[in-house]
Length: 191
Image (cartoon, helix red, strand yellow):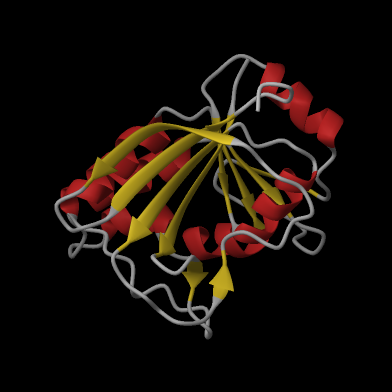
């Protein structure tokens, strides 16, 4: 069965974006970008909220046509265009680039998606991640901690009423100081 993998970048103090939605503090260099390309190309689909999808769709569909793009960026443009995408949105009417719009997170539908053949499902966006957490749908967390404190903004994880037990399965330090923390959920009853 496919897993749902939350893959997000955060500041050391736990924010995914600054107070004015800025993400210019991300430390994505060639090494980290190559890693992202490798990881995302293995996914069977990307599951994003509207904001994340629109951010990606504003740049990546034609990034490989920009003469200023690096070879790694051009490669990612093709990966992003080709991979199936599901956008969860109550307001978006349609989306291009191999994208399906879904209105709500329905746990039974997500579980059925996990049972389909193909690679794991990459999850992006803090609000969508919060909804998936509420429904106990995230199997793995790949958190990329960037070596910066931004002091305020949108946190990755909302306040929760329940404990979510995790097991560390991998750490990796990149040359730019970003650290990957990879966790899998501990099944209920094994805490």
